[in-house]
Image 1 (spheres, rainbow, N blue to C red):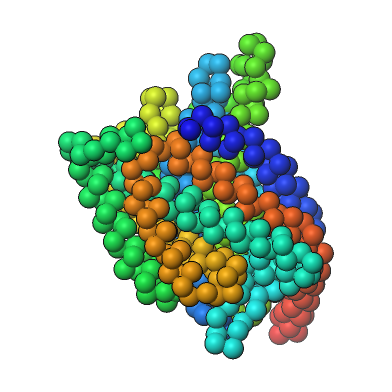
Image 2 (cartoon, rainbow, N blue to C red):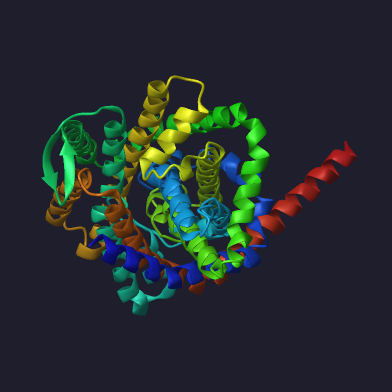
Length: 481
């Protein structure tokens, strides 16, 4: 089963890589390099307030989207990308190259992310009761036209599945239980699909499922409130910890950066005649885990952003781009500390890679370092669980015309998947997540490519023409004074 899923996950990403590269380059050109010219403005808008239609505040919508984005993909996913790349190299040193390609894809992905935020507001529908229909299924149907409704339904179907048994549940709960298992050693209770389940694993699986149920029963308001408090605090804490590790190992940073860049192309493998495969595997690994980590082009974050009390598509697009900048920073820091400490060379897998980096890189006793990582991964993964349930529930609502009975059934299935994910093998879970990520990304990427003229026209008028006019007026006013 593991081999089958791994094979599907590898080959299904060939069209995804092509579509993501095309979409990112297309929007980078059409938006005149928006991600490079307006990144400062995007970061400022992240904490701004807006008034408009929607179910939650602009900051709340951003925090929900970040909660679903900043999760195990930023810690375990990045580490897994480096390990896969390393195994593809004949000399065992190709791993760091995946981080280079992850960063490159992310830079183009910023423009893609902007377009998703823009379209989320542009084509959402606010119902009389205040509920919002928004996200890829909305801008596919209302932006591309009724004849593309089957494509919208396809996205919603794969999105609901991915949220329930992939990226939104099993990878996250597994990350939490793995973190506790690394620190607390207990006896095996039973065996599940060939995996020995320990007492602490069983307890944490039940607790995570229980607390997720408590939050999710409260609906979108409850989810938003938790995310607004937890996400900013944990993101800042994790970044500060990574900065501390980098500062302590500052003398090793130049060599680490050199290793990342050199191994992205792995010239050493040319002698062995395997450079093509090695580079391809590093790129594929970087793109796969990059999508999981920042979700640009995946179509998930527009669902949360559509709920924002903001009627300005351009502003929401910039806010979306600003949020992705935060996730890129977290991913790069994670990869850098893994390379700095040599964690990817230790024959470890999953969370154990990052745990090694924390223990070696921090000036604390190993148990304290592990607890810090445990704290980060637990809250990151938990907020990702509740954030992705919102995505799945919105996809299901679109498919079933807001059927409340189906919504309750979906919640039950979602929570069962959270529990089961705590006990599965990590490789199977990640491959499943990659497969469903790809399936939901394809309809979204097709829509983004088809709607590029809609996005670029107003963006150029608002972001460049009006901004330049305002700057000229301000300069003229200053000269008169």
